[in-house]
Length: 170
Image 1 (cartoon, rainbow, N blue to C red):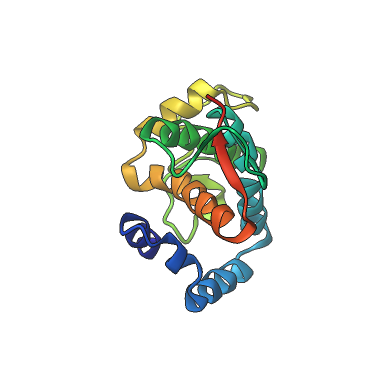
Image 2 (cartoon, one colour):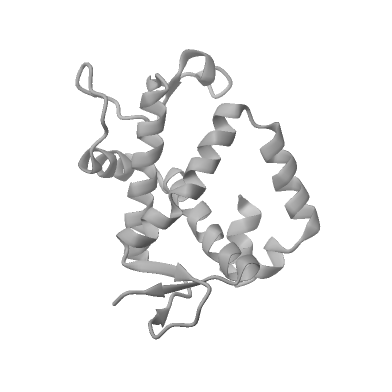
């Protein structure tokens, strides 16, 4: 959201995430989602540990002798974005979605989305990392941010609420 971006850019993630009005807004927004979109959000959160592993990080609630991760570097965000986009593409493909350019209100009915891969081989059932990366690179910055911002928010929430620390392995 624009509010999250502004808070992140100002270094006020904690203030944003502890704002009761924002928490209510996100809670009510989640409750209003269809089951399909709720599950997608949950799967996105569950993938966080995999993404941390892929960029050479881990989390624990103990102090350990590794470099503490305060934020993601640009190359890490790209890597996370591609991985999240691959997860999203596969999830949508598995649910019968295909590339198309319907209006926003009608896309759920026709199971088409403009962020899907425009040309898949007939009968293809798996999205490769290379395909996800190529497709991710064709997206505009705002669409790419949809794949990375939740992960940045997750990093801030873990540090703030759970007392977990995220470390770099190298």
